[in-house]
Length: 219
Image 1: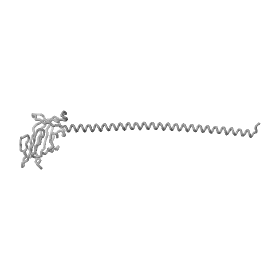
Image 2: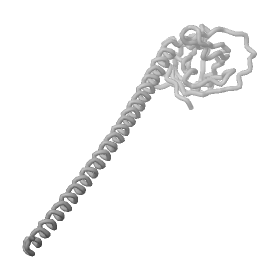
Image 3: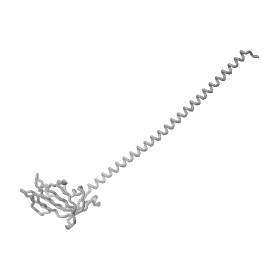
Image 4: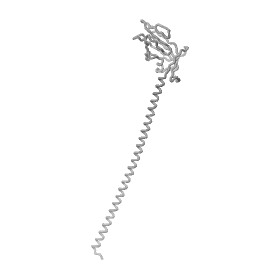
């Protein structure tokens, strides 16, 4: 039979073995727990990376769409400017004589000046003015008339048609011009010019009737 010391020694060994097994089990559990935690963090990182990639892609698509919209707007603006320039540069004015009698309720008034001694064409009307002492000799289509300051000269009724590109009618109106002589200065004769029209005419089109030699300012 074993002695008490041998029995006690065996019991201590069993206890140490059990303790070692428990420690190893705890270590395995801890290692598994840490591994699971790393896997969870890895999955979270992957998900965040995926979400960030999706967000970046949406931002790129949005920026691309905005850039495309801006380009389209710029192209449309450039096209509109080109079309407007072509329309403006192709303006054509035709003035013809008509029988009087059309109502002309609209009036636009300008302060104008004519160079003396130079024939100016307003539509199909030719005007030449020349001052002499306190008078002005006005020649309109060969019809001469002397004017003093404050007197009027009337250019009889005409019809004006303004077209663009040869086919687009921008204006078709009857008009009559009244000139009130204001005086002479620096070889230019000054008038108040009232343009009566049968239609409301934008100033930018009405000025197409006046040549560059006439300095006209709305009053």
